[in-house]
Image (cartoon, rainbow, N blue to C red; front, side, top):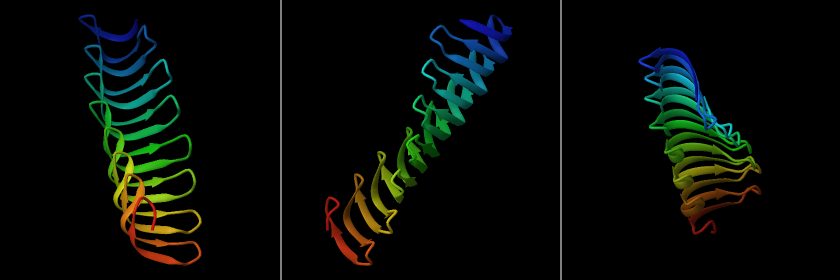
Length: 173
């Protein structure tokens, strides 16, 4: 373990840097050897977090870049992305909206890698409740979803101009 900065009673206090034996690099504002305020961490897997900390835990506004290059931005509470935030995946998908424990829950907007988009309610990361899905080819569905598929009352406008309004069950008319 390597530490640089100002020490009080043998503990880092104020601006400093720390490299732990497990490969974790930490820099920022320290209070008693823990990040407190703005800081940055880089772990051995290449995961990078830059943002606010409290007692060494991600707490407040921040940005997390995972080792697979996915990005999470927003408000962290007890180390987890909570409330309004953004998730931007390396594969081209993105999400902006309400999150619980880093997972879409509540109102949000998702863009898929195939060019389609969904705006509406999410539960456990899937479209759930009322929403609108638009496909790249011009199709639009507005209605109820369950676990990511059309289920319940809805209105589907097809690319050829035909429309269907009524009940959907497991993505089918």
